[in-house]
Image 1: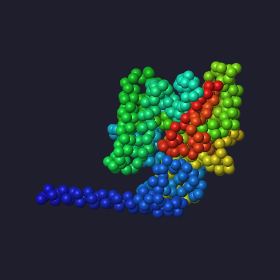
Image 2: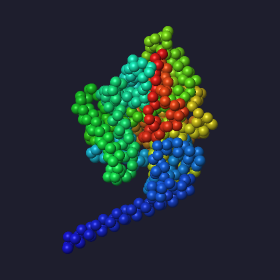
Image 3: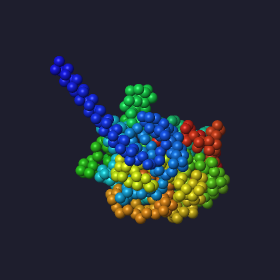
Image 4: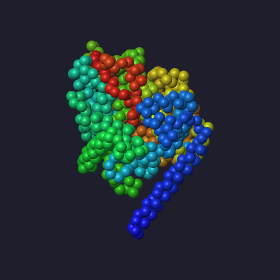
Length: 547
């Protein structure tokens, strides 16, 4: 009887504690939403989850743009117990992201899916952690990998991988159709492998499906549908689909486990400090001790995943944008011809792109910038959290509120880009003060989205003096596809270089057409979905006719 009393008493205590915890969460949540009550919003589609079902649909990037047009540059959502404020004002976004007293930390809980996707102890990475001492050490170690000098050295690797794929396309003949997203993923994965990890993943052989691409696709599906679900544990018990996603996630986790262990036993002289693997293997904890295995693996995985998908998404959008605008494509071909890069009957074997070409090919760079603005790969942008009550767009935003900065909406701001912000117009970049042209190929690759007051490449502190405020149109000198401030994308220079090489190589060697049955570029863009990055519902098949 005494044992029964103990069991019942313990159960009662647990129930009381659980109820108290729920009450604390409910009270705190209610206070936050009461404090944010003046911020515009719209009817919640679900009594329990609020706007969460609305926010997790594949076309959420389009919905956010529509609501911003209706409600203004700031509105709020309720995602279960979290208050999420959407900010699409460019000047406010810059203020939140840049160093200074208004800088906001990443809402690390919003990125927890990445941490959960790995077996072993839950650990953070350079993407998912606070801007703490460990993050600074990681950023400081990785930044030199993406310097201009190192990108110049990476150029032949990117060219070799891209040329091998283009050679296979040419050998197959113009009747063979290829999915441009698959081609781009093969290139980006192999570049990270050969240049970043000094390991070939074998994705550049078109005679067979790419294992690395298939595995990464399964992992990204798992990340999107399972690990980003706050109730993933329940899903695993109730959904067969969720268990399939977990199995796919485990395949990627096992792969990264093996890759990391293999890299750990390789001689360090095979992995220099200016490659991703070499930099991470030499990074320490703030105490001076080496990174624990699981933290090393987590960072290796995020560098591969981030370098794989966003660049591939951008390549697909650039190709489609040019096919949708044949006049702009003709101008790109003229520029390639003027540089001696276009394959013609008089020039059957044009020279390869050289480093100094890249900064001087102003129209190629304008096309890439404009597509990054028009169809931002990471359209939902970054999520920050307010540490104190602050005013944004004239509204009081309480402490602890998640702040989302959707680049896909910000980059179509009429305040920055004029009334034709929804139009594809590369010329806007030829007339802006930050002309991409330069004798140095690194000129564009080294720039950031802000006006030069710091991009975090040093990995330093974030408490430097605040830059003077400037009009929005002066502060954003290029699209914020790679974010801005100290938490911008550390690998953006490599991504830009991949885009330049792939697009120049593709259109210098081939006349490109959509395969029969694909519809028009406009119809394909209408089928865009948000799936960790901006993607396409189904394949984007191209036929490529050698020039």
